[in-house]
Amino acid sequence: MASSSSCANYEVFLNFRGEDTRKSFTCYLYDKLYEGKKIKTFIDDEGLRRGDEISPALLNAIQGSKISVVIFSKDYASSKWCLNELVKILECKNTNGQIIIPFFYGVSPSDVRHQNGTFGDRFDELKKQFKDKQEMVQKWRDALTETSHLAGHESTKFRLDAQLVNKIVEDVLKKLEKITVSTDSSNGLVGLNSRIEQIKPFLCMDLSDTVQIVGIWGMGGIGKTTLAEAIFDQFAGEFDGKYFAKNVRRKSETEGGLEDLQKEMLSTILSEKLEVAGPNIPQFTKGRVRRMKVLIVLDDVNKDEQLEGLIGGLDQYGPGSRIVVTTRDKRVLEKFGVEKIYRVNGLKFDEAFEHFCNFAFKEKHRPEDFKRDSWRVVEYADGNPLVLKVLGSSLYLKRKSHWENVLHDLNRICESDIHGIYDTLKISFKELTPRVKSMFLDIACFLEGEDKDFVLRILDDSGSHRLDVLVDKSLITVSDNRLQMHDLLQEMGQETVRQESEEVPGRRSRLWDPKEIRRVLKHNMVRILHFFLYKSFICLEFCTRIFPTIPAHPCFFYNFYYYENIL
Image 1 (cartoon, one colour):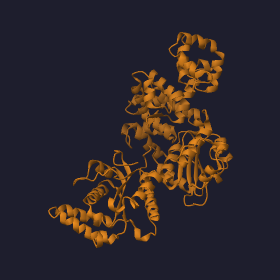
Image 2 (image 1 turned 180 degrees about the horizontal axis):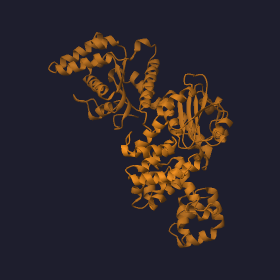
Image 3 (image 1 turned 180 degrees about the vertical axis):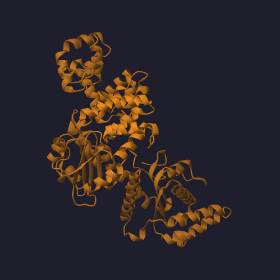
Image 4 (image 1 turned 90 degrees about the horizontal axis):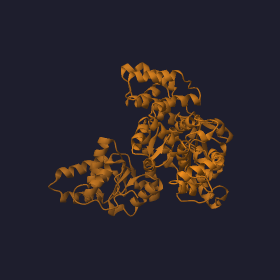
């Protein structure tokens, strides 16, 4: 529950008179915002209103909120705490652009503006207690007058409290969406707003009686996932259930595959844990989903069987549902019957140039003496955001001679196909020291998605520094304390390992493909047993995990082949 005990920022702050509405209207509103729409909402449920000043926790909550909902009720003006909060809220509006949504519950805007009626009587009673603090009283009066002029909602225009709550929640969602969209480069991708506007007609959000499926198609690194995430963030609040599946291609190849993904999807949509999937899903569960308006995003799909296994027919979802699929292969969408396909093109030159400069110089513009070289790099990247990001990060704070070397390497590469992109990304990889290269390949083959602390525990003392190098060069990111690597960079790393021995997997430094692991184990069991007799410190753990199945974590095979090859 988002309460006063948390120090994190909030999306909504509720300002209200507790005795009037806490157990009725405000309680329902909070539940709809936080539990229903997952909007991070602050409500003072720990009695922080003590003394004459706003407590630090309340002050932080007000300052850290994007929107404040002010609920004016008959006794609101009798509370010095409500009024002090209101003064602070208006300060945040004027200094930080915080949005205020006033709601008049049982009172009119005129009553609040002029302090009339019962509302005014309560304010008069409070003024008598502060006769010697006229400056404070005037601040309260000015705050009431200013807020009453803002666009808001009146209870007299609705028959039921449920309608009131729904209207306010709808208003909050729309305003939060605009805030999200206004941060154009929040994901590090210049031009994101224009792409969102281009895809909106494909989504047909104004059609509430049909289910729509939209494909997002484009080459690797072009920004499909970033666009899908922006769409999800902007519109998720308008749906009863939502689910974003990242890396469907990779996850579908793991043990459990599509069945585990479907369990996760249904559990997320229904907000409860389900243990069944596929043909075993109860009709009752299917019926519940069929009555829900849902938003589903499936990222990086490479087979139409994945779409069939995860979402099936469109008649399984309620009216107004939207399904978004990202893929590199347009044929996957066409085979599944997707008609609305948005192609993600490369960035325009001015957008690409700005994106590159954000990483190469940490600002939108470049020093004059790097102008010509910057243009050349941007031309080579051909509008691919990932290539621009990786190249820019690799050139940050580098001498002119280093730029010339990179441009020389780029001259030899054709970026027209996927191998050309791999070669371009390898320019940054080749600059790494041997130990940092090794860590990059370990992450690409084994550790992508793993907890950062776990990875550091199995590495030596310099592991943290090497991770920082990879982050600085935009080769990995850390999100929710887990290591993340773009699938194109991961494929480049795995391809680098494959090239160590294309015909004989056992001669490579790392193995991660279960089929190749089984094949190598089958033909090298004598050497494996010989190895573990002399390396007994990991023999027990290895044997308990390998028999009767292959180990769940392929890191063992990296360690094995590293030592086995030097016997």
